Image: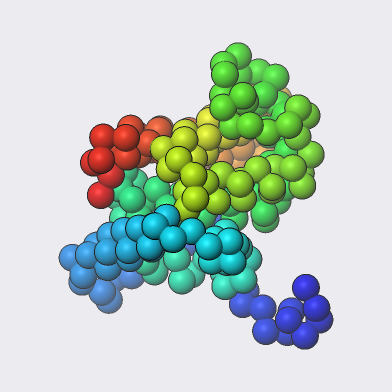
Length: 212
């Protein structure tokens, strides 16, 4: 990115800042209708006529514009809905882009500890470097727009479970010496586990044509 571009780069709100953001001045019913209609219209249009440049812009949206615009559309939607799934995928992407080193540390520890097929389903290299995890989460997000939507959600859920496992085990390591860090890791593990369950449920709903 050029220096000129950076001068006009919109600040990015971090996931922790926007996770529980409320928009109390808006009617909840209107917000819900807008969230669902925009999510369905966006997905239907892009998947019907996938164009590389359009998908590239959607994958890079938070890097270019920040998270606030997406938050205003989808952040208050039910977790197990189409806008809720899209919101969680963008938050996951932002989490990895924001701190790929920590993401790689958690992923590698989780990969060793988890004892399931989730690392294979997620599809990260072994071991996964920070830049490779960035590429992976972008690939998963791209799959929503041009691949099998349910498979993309399953990969994201598997990725979250591996990360959650890593965060849980690292929290155990730090519990005796750095309790605050252990608490932060435990909180992250819980959030990632919740994401995983919601995304898996959304994948099942999509396969039954019931993800609304």
